Amino acid sequence: MSGSQPSLARRLGTGDAVVIGLGSMLGAGVFAAFGPAAKAAGSGLLIGLAIAAVIAYCNATASAQLAAAHPTSGGTYVYGRERLGPWWGFTAGWGFVVGKTASCAAMALTFATYAIPGPSWMQRIVAVVGVLALTALNYRGVTKTVALTHILVTLTLIALSAVVIGIAVGGGARIDNLGGVDALGSGGLYGILQSAGLLFFAFAGYARIATMGEEVRDPQRTIPKAIPIALAIVVVIYLVVAVAALLAAGPDRLATSTAPLAEAVRAAGAPGLVPVVRAGAAVASLGALLALIAGIGRTSLAMARNRDLPTWLAAVHPRYRVPHHAEAGLAVIVSILVLTTDLRSVIGFSSFGVLVYYGIANASALTQPPGQRRWPRALHVLGFIGCAVLVATLPLVSVVTGLIMFALGLTGRWLILRRRNRSNTHKS
Image 1: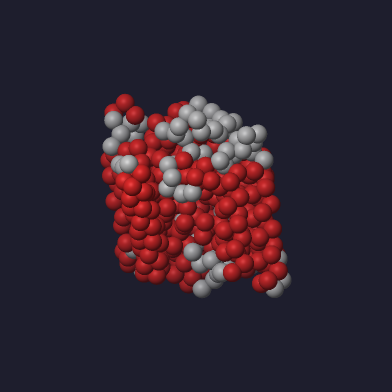
Image 2: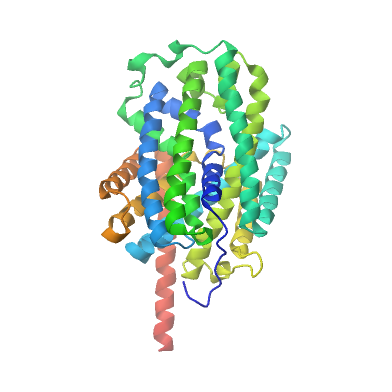
């Protein structure tokens, strides 16, 4: 980063960073991802959840180790550029920005669907209002973002606690719904790995801590501590919720539901908690959307600084010290997507982009010298292999869509660089 470019302000402590991670991971994924995971693997989704958690931990250590050495905005986009080269960095950044922009639209629509039972046109308007309101809040500075994230995370945890307690006391939960040990393998190895890839969608938010590395105080100490803490908390929460949902509804019933946790409380004999699930999903969607806007804004800022995105996006507000152009541009694009498409089924697509992103993070961490190493290299090897395997086992439509997305981005960058080189040749 050039010294002439304005930087962001370091205002976040360890607790704030953990909350940002929790707000990103405890999003709508926990209210939606168990359905497609159950369809892929049945009760074996519990094994898939464990696999996703292990790979997420490997990725988290790579991200934390890299963020401590490169405490600036951009996350793996920056790490890939510094450790592997510009093309690798661009690939990571492109996958993150495009995949997560689609996720922003999905989170906004999910929020509106749960919050407003009205017609679709009204839900789309409410979704746009949510996007604009959260963008305006982010515009006022990162401390405002963290303050609201604290509130949203607390409300989400209350809703999830109510779901688990309701299932426990509702009387409808049965151990038979798990199907025994044999049922864990009913989906086969491929189904279990596919469920892991789908459930990884719900873990991916810890990257937000790293992408905001330029705003963390004492990043060499704070980030390596905050990322594993946030991930550990979420793993425990997801495991408890998954077991409760399976005990209540069983894998077959979860697999056919678009709102698996709502289906679980109905099956458990606690239908009165369905409004709590709806409210929790709406709040969690807002929390994830808030963190996504912040994370995409910082990655876009880093890419714009290196001219991988329009340089207009590299602006930092002189008072609030946020990438206001990047966040405003994101709000416009997401609002257009919300009004014109239905992106609530992007779990696989987003997982593809994020898994590629983390694969590059692990590869980058492998190149770090011993003085920067905080975890064994074997974790990064396992993380890279795990990301590659999960990408390959995602639903075919997700793989094809993801490959097209990367092909467009890489081809576009090649054409732009070629034109710049020709322009420089003519000038010289």
